[in-house]
Amino acid sequence: MAPMDKRRFLQCIAASVAGRASAFALVGAGIAGCSESAPKQTFNAVDLTGADYAKDFALTDADGRRRTLADFKGKVVVLFFGYAQCPDVCPTTMTEMAQVKQQLGADGDRLQVVFVTVDPERDTPAVMKAYTQAFDPSIVALIPTPAELAALSKDFKFYYKKVDGSTPTSYSMDHSAASYVYDPAGRLRLYARYGAGVAPMVADVKTLLATG
Image (tube, rainbow, N blue to C red; front, side, top):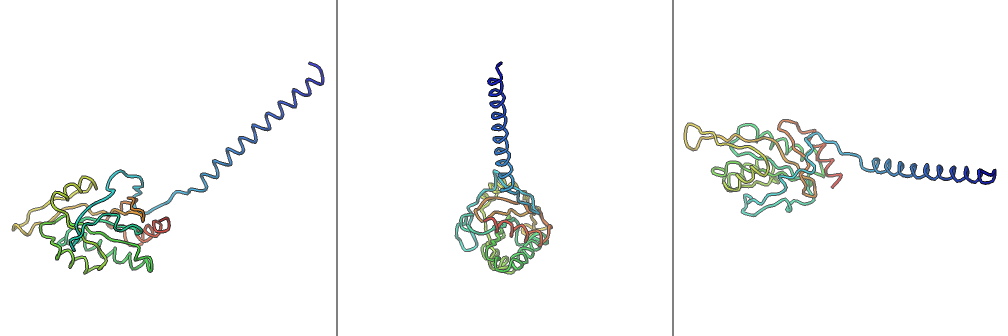
């Protein structure tokens, strides 16, 4: 190869290497930029983002109105199941959610607590309204029919069972005790286990409100 041809050959190789290096640098910068711009949210409750169940409901409230998640758009919704004669789990959850709302301050109006009875036989509209208002007048009480309750149990993957008592009306209800938390866009995001406490829920609600 002539000296001039050899020199041109080496220049072409150098230019090609430099071009590839620049391309790799740009791709790397793009990947880094993408990863830095979308930090993963962290929660105290179990993260259910993207779950393909418990997406909505259509139930009657204590005032006779049909309610769905769309009624609460723009708010974080905390939904849980129970019944008015529940001796411990339900009143504890009610009390804690009232405290959560209080600790949110001005953002408390952007939190909606929804209580769904698993005992529609005894939890009449009057009973449910009186029960929820004893803790917080803003709590929405929902009363499914027995058929709606059975369908909800499958869709929300929760458990309930009637436990006979000494008389036909003195029975109790076993039921799942966790809460389902939806973001302001109405998407299921969290599964909050019973007994987690007020402070963790306050923090999770604030996180969801900040992104909604």
